[in-house]
Image 1 (cartoon, rainbow, N blue to C red):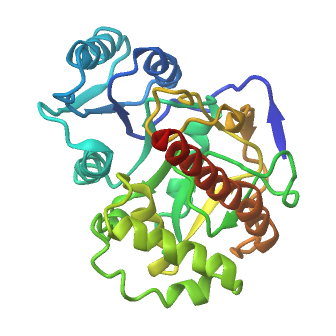
Image 2 (image 1 turned 180 degrees about the vertical axis):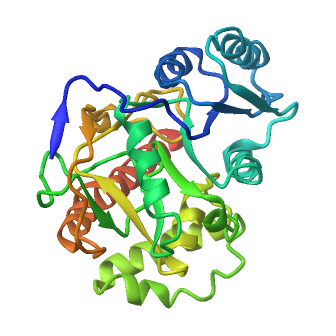
Length: 309
């Protein structure tokens, strides 16, 4: 595995990038700078509209849009999807990705708080081309939650887990995405994907919560889609994307302890077999999903306690 503190692109980037933004100029500037260095030939920019009940948000939303458009200083095709009204996370993000894949066969997707290393773009590009006809692979992630544990000598491994802090995919996979989880009743795929009843129940409950509109999100529906179609994801053996959006003003990411450092990665060795690394997935569940679940329950209890005072 070849890791470096610096990265020299092997050739100009040829893959389109979707950049989804909203009202946070500080994080947007940092992620945009990484995109600007990569110089994608096509840049899609999607932005949700301001919320009517948030004073001053319209100015913040416009400042983000203006900054990006005024600072694109490389030759590229620019397409924008700027919403006039607020759709919320669930529909603003999912519809933006659909808009992107209606025009691109494959591409890279970044939100305004997902700061990638430079090699992330070329990592995605190489694997998008390599696996475009392999319907066992549905998702290329940039985030690694193994806390420094290497999973073999290869530069990436296969996983059931779908991480969306910087990722890439193909239009022919995304077309099966269902934001409303209309096929939720059939979750037999959980028995195929996991032989652990605790893990199965965790995801069954989570999908039910999403189906009941208890979470304003879009990503668990993508997880559902991938698993329902027996798909898997690619995970780099080191972390390539850091979520810099943690804080009190974040919608879903408030625990700063989850901020991950990034490194650069050049692919030298591909896995010889497309087999999911169950040890890595077990570790991810125990140290990422299960931990988040316990933290969320604790925070909800504290909220109920203080609200009752």
